[in-house]
Length: 452
Image (cartoon, rainbow, N blue to C red; front, side, top):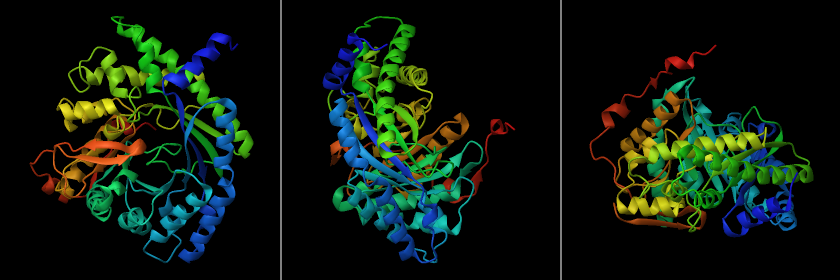
């Protein structure tokens, strides 16, 4: 039973604690758009997206006004483009990206994800075509996001793909150098990618999903931070219980919006992704939550333990609130998008090695990390390999979104604005990993992957 206290508490969360619906994402299958002629395929893609998502933005705006709950982003995710492009005779898939971009503009959404390939065990010709098209695709579009899944617990890590992605990231940074390498902010390399993730840049519409679906991402770092302010000196099990209860309330808000959007758009409701996705705004930081637990600065000793507690409690609270929790669900630690993380990185307390340790227990991985522009492609590939290994061995989703903007050095700041924020350029190890990356091949799946 909802009472007056619950209503007033929710209003306070929205008005003072940065609670919002971070995204309503419509997933759309493009498998019916396959065609030998890439121009025909692009025409089908544009038509289908515009037909299905025509009312997405207006409906979200109606819900936002009626319920008084901010919906920050309206987005679309589509079938991995490598699967659609496989039918085409063309080897350059940039036209597909441009068709996605045009459709996204017509529908009025913020981003469209799915210029993607799943290559955890090997690459088809279509996968290679898509991956090699990424730099041109992301430099010639504005709203398109791309992702490549290079590993999984069941398949191991495709090191040939890892090596190629290091080169692709460098080329993407160069092609978008006039915009501080922003193309790399729209490119994610995954291990254990999920099919129902509503968050960019890694969202795609998985092959196990229905024809179309509504997935909602909810974010509330400020709400959790505020709840912990009343627990000064309390034992950590009490802290965990408070986070769990707070996550429950936040998830309920997300489910309400998801069900409304689903009904009004005549589209099945998929999942609520309860992720503490921060923004550069003061009071909307995951780092500040960890510091509220008793850490002087995020990144100091104890940070990984505090993050593990936070992530687990968020998931437990979400599952209590809805039987349709999915996506990534947990705590994100994107450096450029979290004012507390930015401050910790600038102070030198938070480094890439510590971030890697933290990714063992958070929801994604090394996210929005700026590194010097002269960082070799092989070093970027090695960073991807390390992060993929964390995901593979721990049977969790991990990812790398790294920004090697040309002309930048340690101490510089890459400024992207909006939700992407400012990224302080962080140091990387100078010792080479080139010989290791050059070996290629595949890192076999761990023994515990044999579960049948």
